Image (cartoon, rainbow, N blue to C red; front, top):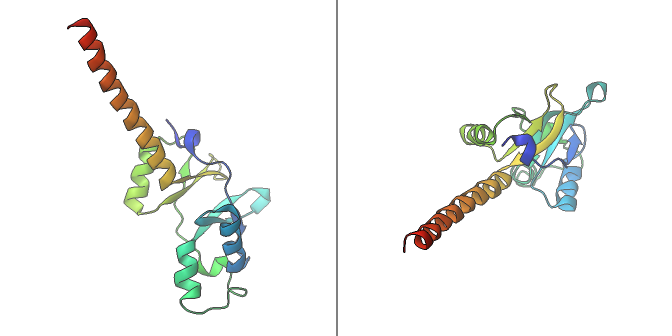
Amino acid sequence: MTVGEICNREVIVIQRDESVQEAAKLMRQFHIGAVIVIDKPNGCTIPVGIVTDRDLVVEVMATELDETVITVGDIMAPDIFTVKENTATYEAIELMRRKTVRRLPVVDESGELVGILTLDDALQILSEQILDVAKLVRYEQKKEQRHRP
């Protein structure tokens, strides 16, 4: 299974010159914990950073900065890690573990944003797969009991 098959294609984005207050409003409106910061060269949506709800608390609220003046570009994590949509899910989860990130923007071959893979998405897929394996084990046991009383 590839990342492109399981990622969320509805990504909430913001441009780097928008205020952190606007980022917070988007997070509240869409019930999400992060927005992807983008640039739009030639009309392409290119991820360049990420701002999380924790960034807002630690970088803006705790330091009492003016949320209407500080931009997402000022506080975004600039070293954004992305994954191509044809990457195996396992490889993406391994990248998340190695880089200690909870969210991976998903890009196409040209680097344009097409989705996002979150830790929650990965946990849901893994738990479904484990449940399928558990069902298979139970089915095999019952099958053997029917055929070998």
